[in-house]
Length: 518
Figure 1 (cartoon, rainbow, N blue to C red):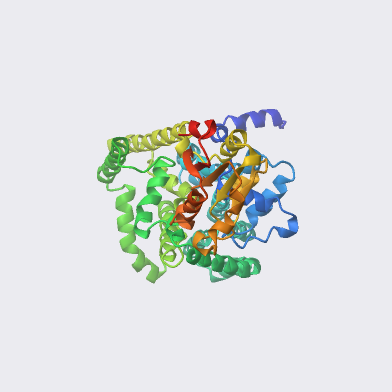
Figure 2: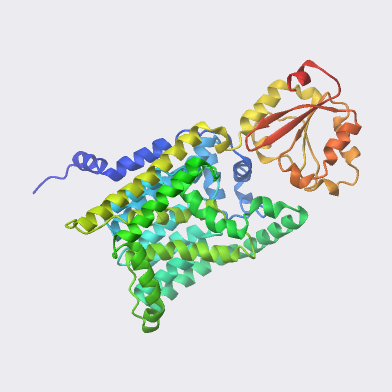
């Protein structure tokens, strides 16, 4: 009888390509992990460091509470950016990559799983949100783990239920994926009992949160009424969304602009896809068309058999279209909010690899073109990731550096910072030290009865710094700037940070500091 060697077994496991991909994934996600929190991240952190009893007081934040609890417990150890992001985003991102590999291997082959995992590992879009303390990476993890459970026979219902409930408590867009998974469960098992045993506990476990969800929904609707233009700022036109989601999945954090580089990449990808479409009657695209034609008839006869590729297509199209339709009522669809679809997107591309033994020129050509297609996607991913590392406009708002610059440049005793909102912005409050700050107390400047009385604290200051951040929404008529001019202040220049915009510098007279900003 052979002795089991733990050392030898561990060495064998670590030699598997998926572990190399995971190590590579982790290394790609280290740069910028310590970067500044932006507005939503800082708000998340501020809410999460409150006492445990206050973790459910999140009506203004249209998100479920699971990430708040995870961040709350992580913050008891450290409140540094990298540590909180590690638990709320990075680890879920790595688990998502592993689960993507397992699904690809289960449905198709080892090679398909490896390619899909590699594409997800290098995606600048996935890297970006694996470093963001917001509920995008977390629901993607639950989505892939629950899908892996769904595709595994025998189906362990209690495991699927727990993962699904975790997903529901992570994102309000998760129900679109869950609905699709239940459709697949019905088509695979055709068992009303199994479906009922799954749906009922999920509903019962989510019902306690339903009143809070309705309160959050009402608060979100009220905000859109309070601030004209808010809906346009936080949502995307419906028609544009149909194109933007797949483009962001492909190009990640890169700006979607009609540059020659962007057009060339689109042409190359289109050419390779068309080539695959034409090369074989056995390709995915022909099978898809034929399958779609047969679905109504097979459903009537209850003889529909789901192929692996058909399952992927359903897992991509049904959640996306259902979220898009709901967005006509409540604008919820944005690329980052459906990050849980990105692994299926890459799995679909990787599944184009022929799984049969290559014994003919036809399959050799199909494999060659598919490798070209996957390599092109990989190149775009790496290009986007390197650009993300080096180009500040592609990175998050750097509030930490901005506040440090203001604190070191402008004396706190003679300076006042003004923000056109009902409270100082979350990143400004998160980063120390405290600094003289005035907010309007309202979300819209026109609601202030007497602007001159409100801005009186600025009257005896030498420097007044006015944030343009969100001011086009809350002060479109420049009431703040007009009032400062009435007080005798003169604009001397701006501090400009990508994503944050201008911080306008006002002084009472010419001085070295003001002149330096011209």
